[in-house]
Length: 268
Length: 366
Image 1 (cartoon, each protein chain N blue to C red):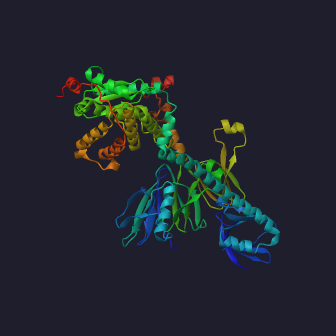
Image 2 (spheres, rainbow over the protein chains, first blue to last red):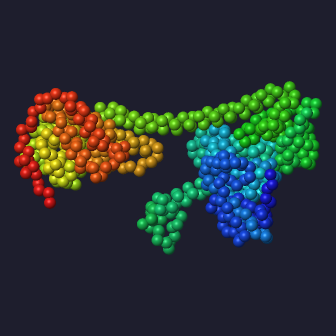
Image 3 (cartoon, each protein chain N blue to C red):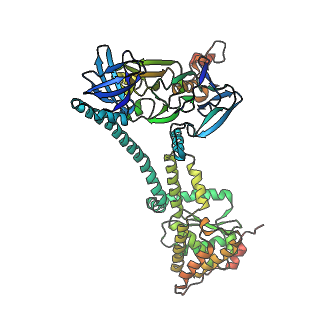
């Protein structure tokens, strides 16, 4: 299957966007709603399913779209064609603070398993599928749920991770214990499992939850330092509007002096 | 010997692995990657591996470190298995067992999930389909005293909307007719007249019967009013109002279980009682029961038919298709009642009520 080879450039440091350069006739697939800008000459086309040429017929398209619905994405993806005579650029922005990770699927063996919702954009021809996590324990306690996303193809795909990215190649048998929820992507050769924290005391008071995710090599893994859900939790916890405490806001000059001193919430 | 591809990881190879052409040669697995060729070690370890243990993971120790070779599911795995030397068959069986264990557990998990979701759903569907029977069963356990309280609530609601009259010749006539229809009732009946021009009457749970003055004006004889009373009293005695409450409560509980708590219980229930949206089955049952009560009180049941026809004539203008309205079409009801009434023997006792005086005593409509 012919993949479109795309050149790209990533801008920004913590809140990034990626600019993809398309040669005439090339196309890129973007997750619905992540497009930031595009030059004229780029034709936007919304397709049912994932826009890869692998799905034949109406039923195949329906299946692809159904899978996307299960992963919590839109039924449609947007394909950006370059209809102009020269090179044109289209940019996709990451939806929350973090890093955009370029993945060369050809180098990774053609398949990558990643956290659902982490897909940002790809060269046209990359198939976006779902991979059910069939190990029940991992699905329940691994922090990534039962539904993961599978990227198939041999072009470039771009995945988004929250916070700072940790990229690591595990040697055969090398194991890394990871906080659940921090796994962004891994090669399918990596064994993704869970492990009980070990001590009841740690399980109850350690604050790390009951299980670690374990990643056993060989293969490459990508971890995120700040899963979006954790960031969201912290924001909700400290948002006065949501009943949280604006504890760190206290300044001697601010209006919250008294509230800060008394340790009460100062939302009035 | 068939050749197949897999992905090999190990010292001296790319960290993300390299594609390897593999082939069994004299009981030895030979791998050829773009950069080097290597042989499987003497003591391989075969397990299920990769995502969901779908692949076969063959690992062995070499002097420079551990190598792992992954065989994809499908044709490659079949080729690998076909020529696997017998000394490693036991290991392969173990690996395949672990692969099928993951698959089996997954299937059980899905089955359990489907069951967990479908059982309450099926129960709910069954309850909705059989809601009348279920509601009737639940209502058995509600004491009449509680119904009386519900009736009081409805009374308060009604009083807020219209003027209720509880004495005078008209109310006295209603009581006289009504009490004939409800011998040995567990309820203490309250007969009330509503100052309202509509041709209407309703019975709330617990024996609250409200007749609109418009109905008394429309009736030519007291027997016609008695026929309507018989129908309404039948609703109360058959506890249709309460069944409706139970049904809508049950539906709301079901809705809450399904995660949609939009309905606010009590005001909704009261409005339900006031609107008296009885099912068509309930209406038919009330017709039959009312007829029985009229006959028991020796009041000519033909009046039921007469009044029904009057209603039919009135409703001509705004007719709905029968399957759309909750009340059966008056013509159908009249026809059905007529058939039943014609078989009943007399003699009937006329009601000793001065109907002209009653109608004169009604509040004048503006």
